[in-house]
Image (cartoon, helix red, strand yellow):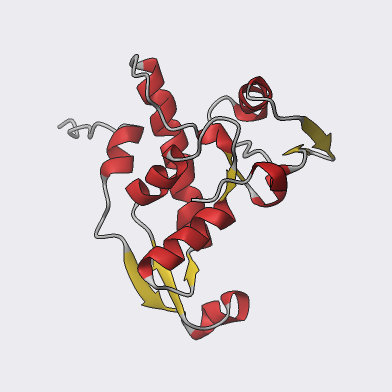
Length: 160
């Protein structure tokens, strides 16, 4: 008796699956030591992607900026650092998948960086691919220890 194999969801399907999100929840005692008090918004994957899509060529955004935008949008104290990061990662892979399918207007995920302008090595193509894309848009990327960072990120942060 063969088990029916379940086809894995594509990245684009994962991005479209909001799983009942967004939702705003009270920050629990366990979380408050790290995040303070108030409320946290757990965004929908599409919301994170929508913000990433708005970053124009030559500009950059960090996960923390995305979290602040989401918190403000939903009237929460903070945007969830864990899900926001995961959804940015899903958006990046969905964009790459769409590009492979021949779609042109993909999310420019390489413009979304970690805190301090650090390139996210878990995005498609790793550091090398993103570095090339960022340099093509006029950014200077340097290596600091094991991390690759965009120089003078403050000058390029987008105001959305």
